[in-house]
Image 1 (cartoon, rainbow, N blue to C red):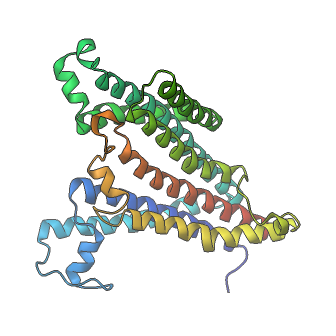
Image 2 (image 1 turned 30 degrees about the horizontal axis):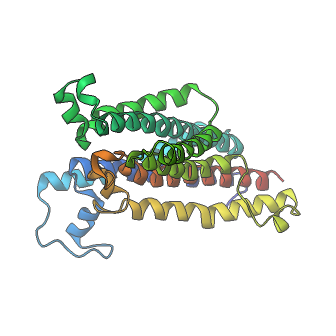
Length: 327
């Protein structure tokens, strides 16, 4: 039987291990998809274990070594978790929950700035291209590059996203209300331009969808941080603090965390999966240069949603466990 004194340590190891394994999975996903590392699926298929059909052509030495390195990452992350927990053995579950909440808030803030800045930048570029203003302002070579997805995404979107994460580090508030206002404002401008000026382009509608999807998915974790999600309030509000803690702990561990893991693992389960596929191909709107080049980012939204919700559900689980063990 587990000693009650050691239970917080085990819960900390369990919680941090879930997050560590998830982030190693994300790192391995990048190595597999972008740098052609074999991945654990190929390693398991090489030996025909865990239900994988044995490869007809076994992995050669160098490739096999890469797959073992990817497997080793998981063991290293688990050792790192144990080291961190034992080094901070007096740290409470409540403190851990606050740390995770701060991490969630940072990711959400940075993502908000990314969709705001990248959305405006891509909107302006598409406007210049459609109205044939890019060439007079810049030159023919730059104009040609601006309509190439790989160029625009690599040299414009990615740097702006990195800048957004820097901004997110130095800001401490999230302007979701302003994003909502921008969604309404951009839709209102479409109505004005369509019915008054008889002007409408595909990139206008794309921007509305881009911002609206971000508002919905990113605000989910933000609302979870601030207890903004609707529960079965007719029951929950009448619970004692202990019953609320049980509800949050069980709900987070049994329903919330597994759901987020399913989204991550299935969404990044292969090169053609729902998240990896659009990102690898730099998928853009079907309208081509008349629209925004942001369709691939809407697939990334789903990953950001799942990761931030996973971290916050884990924070809920740890915080609620602290309340249960304290009493």
